[in-house]
Every structure is written in C-alpha cells, then in structure tokens.
Image (cartoon, rainbow, N blue to C red):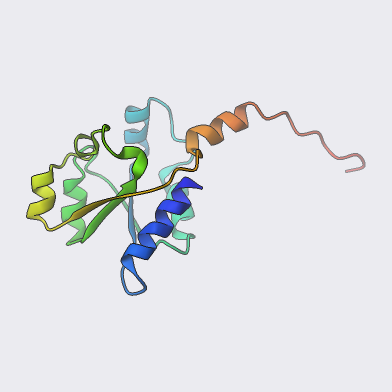
Amino acid sequence: MGHVQLLAGCRKIAGSDGKVVVAINPDDFVLKFKGVQPTMSVAERKAVLLSCKFVDEVIINNGWQDSTKTIEAYGPIDFVAIGDDWAPPKDYYAQMGFTKQWLEDNDITLIYIDRNTGMSSTTIRQRLKHRPEMQPLKGV
C-alpha cells in the first residue's frame, strides 16, 4: 500500500502530461544495503512497476549510492519524490549520494510523499513467514 500511495502521489505531481519515472536498485545493491536478497528480482520488480497505471518508465539505478549518475544519464528531471519514511532525521542525501547544492544546481526539487500505511516489504515478508500453511481443499 505504501508504494502505491507514493506512486499515486508522483502521478498527481507529474500531472497528465508529465512522466513518472521510477529508478530501482539492482539486486546486488539491495543485498549489500539491506543484508538480504531482495524478495523479487530486479526484473520482477520492474515488471510489476510497469504494470502500475501511475508509472510511465522504470530505469535501473546503476550508480549505487551515487544516484546523481543515474539522474544525469537519464536527462533533466524536475522532481525527486520519495516516501516520508526517509524524511529527516534520516539522511536521504547521503543515501542517494547527492547534496542540497547538487539539487539546487540541477533545478531539482526533493519532495517527501506521505505513505504512512504501516505496510512495507519487510511487513509482507513477516506476514508470509508466520502464515499457517495452506491445506489442500478436500476433493481437489
């Protein structure tokens, strides 16, 4: 739910003639950053995002913690939108490898979007771990 709210917020900001481009991290970066293998591969995550009505394009963040490389390679953008779970005191700038000055120099606005749903991929994984095994239906 949180990601859907985030993407819907991005669509509102972009408007009907704007473009919502989502950058996703490669599997090896997710493993290094989170210490666990991603639940879905980068190809699976990309396919899911491309099926979402709020998303126009999905690119791979090959800059790892220096997202400026991916942003600059993609071309000019107006906004970087992220979930409010990354709002201060968390240091999103360090996470992304850019500074307020770099955003200003590139005329990019950083926007925090409310996604306070309590739902996350971690929550989903926990639910799956603790879900009772499904029993086959009788007669099937």
